[in-house]
Image (cartoon, rainbow, N blue to C red; front, side, top):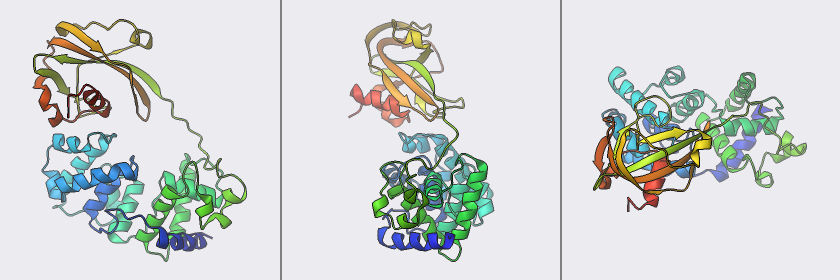
Length: 344
């Protein structure tokens, strides 16, 4: 049965392959870059980042020799910034400890920082033709529907069983083509919603389609509980300058730059603008509307206060406003800068 699945999948792929800039490349460095970018990012959003990244850092050595600020600036707006930091760390590790040679065995690739089972399988198959199936959310969804897997895909046992099933399906095929095919099938046809079953060559033998369970599979047991946070950011203007600092502590946006801020309780968020002990002699010009920023486990509710004054906290640096585009900021701060026309 897995072999029949594989045969139909590859038949579909021959006529429906997506032309993506990294697909024809066997360079493990470029494949690695593309896979890290696509870990938490849609292809449409990630493609221009990939092209800019390869233009700036065409090989592993150039990435290894870059500064973290340079890497984060290129990553700016893409989110999940630990990916960029891990990418930079791993490039330096391969360059310094492995003589610049990217590992060519699945087990060694899997040891690299920021590389999990899916990414290791993708690099191993695309760069070296090794027979390791990729298993991500798209694959778990497609396989659960096709084979009628009713157990939760959050379960480690279910993921292991699906991986073993795909290990059988990938045998006697070109691993790179099989993995590209199943990735494209999940992204283009067997989508979470608005599934294109009428265009699917697998529909006639698909359990979910035959049993009217496309909308209910796959099953999940875990629900992510999001916390809500309420933050005031201060854009404190001092003549032609303002104040920023680099986030050094671990957590969201580590390594990016930020404005001075105060976090408050929900019941304080819609009251008067809070006072601070390190923003001195300031006059408030305006307070923005609420910006909502969604993260995987948090929803941030943010207001920006534009004020004139100065900062006594020495952890903040005074920089010219027209130089802010030289620094990497979280996406929500970039949105505010754009809204107040600080950048062209």
